[in-house]
Length: 332
Ligand code: ATP
Ligand code: MG
Image (cartoon, rainbow, N blue to C red):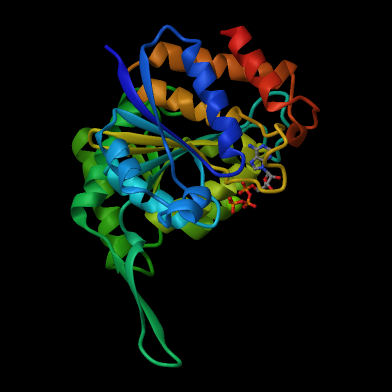
């Protein structure tokens, strides 16, 4: 069975790292039908639409989408694309690799971030010259859905330790936002309890101190939308660079995979971008489509290259995107 995967390079280094990820996927014994689609600044300049309707529809109908990055138009592209794939959870692993300089080399965590509500779905209003407000949205249904996903994730041994008994940590601020985070916390812990998954909790501010001090205390971390955004970036800082971090936006019957980094305009067009984040995003895509073994093969190949080289400039080497990609393919 062939998987239809929509490929959206977007702008900047998206055009360099996405083809690298596709090259890696093509090196595997998995049948893909890649469909190229456009989004971002360049297509907006040409057509007036940062996310053309065809691209939205292709992503909505595909088995999965691989996305690079969009520049100025990022919000106009990625928010609707997440909606196109009906994504309710953003999965962001942050793992330090041997051979890569990291603030905390022992870091190995996965954030499961609520992807539809919180302050990002909230309604902002300018009520007067002096006053603006924001309404925060939290539903029991979205909180429970995220928690169900987290339980499955842990039960399937997909957490960093691979041990279903590791459970997860829910980070929130329910002591202050008693109604919204209170609801979130209560529902997430209730689902964990119903399913017999071990769950502990942290206040998100305390968590922001404890994570960098000792990341080994944590594995799978479940967060509301904004908290997940900020805290997973914090974790990114611990592992040594944006060029390494993949992410997945998982929906009910669809998903979108993208590196955490953006268009990196300072190095775009030079062929020196680190393709690791995009390639690891492709590994997550493989796993999502049921090719768990191939996903692991890609991870192993990437890990080998990170450890032995060649490396791109951001990791202190002088290899090109193509050289790193070829080295990964070679190991496959
Ligand atoms: P955008 O507005 O599109 O997010 P940005 O200027 O914030 O662009 P990012 O892509 O977020 O740039 O990355 C910040 C910096 O990190 C870049 O300027 C670049 O130096 C570095 N960087 C990010 N991704 C990579 C990568 N894949 N390879 C090498 N360096 C990278
Ligand atoms: Mg950026």
